[in-house]
Length: 399
Figure 1: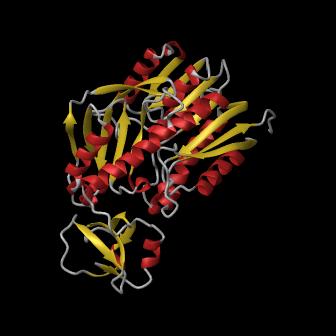
Figure 2: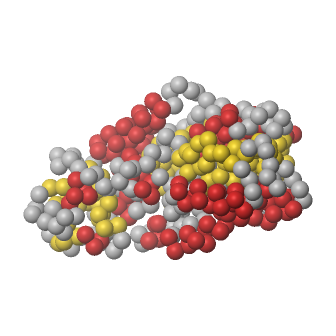
């Protein structure tokens, strides 16, 4: 197939997507999900990928090399490159046994997510093209990584946009319901079958360690809002030596796992778990006069499309307002957004607005992103989805 004049510049700049509106012509009617060769309007080779002519992103590129065949050997090489990068990234520590193995476009395997949990792989095939290539990918994963098992958890909404059903199934080996991993030396029990996403949010690993080391002091009282399996709170209790952690989440399953994780790390006595809507819980806590030395607010993505950004900003601001009102003078706060529509400047704007409304003098120490095993692609701003602002309140107060 060929693309319209001028559209080849993006492909030559290694952008992995071609939109439906950019297609000029086909040599024949394509089958959804099949492999294709992309050429410019003059017929010159540009790339190889797979096509779904009914999708807004019609083509996702796998290689820019004319001589490279999309076969088992291709996936073995791609997965080896991704696996070796992660091993090198984590080679200085044996204290982490859970990481993002394949990060879709960032590993030039668009439509594939694979997380490694201490010998097991949980994979998501998010596009029709990768669904068709699944047998080759599973073989390549087994050959390169040699896992005890591979579990598919293709439950993301993008599959429905591609005309695919949501699927959970074992692809290889035997899969336990739960598996224990290490994250920065902390034991984490992950629910593979029945858990959220692939089981755990691995993208915050480096931010949790930074939080524990620099934003928690021995004896602190910490609030972990939207705690999921307790990651930030556990780091605060185990590494930061916090005296008390209040962990809030709406999921009963997540809280039960967070409690189990606190128990196996020997810090259960430091935790208070609260099940409920974080908006309501934080409001009630703030109105009751609760105060904290350190707070982390890590909500789910409120803005899943551009049309709801303004509404999402109101939600983030309400949470940040509650947090700032409960922050002691000299206290530390981390606010996060995992929506790519909430850009770093927008997140800063929301935090500034909340700080001004609460008369809270803040200084920002860090703005961080997802962990390095979740790299982002410069050509795709959306791939830098997670951002966190680490701020500290001044000791003095203004009435």
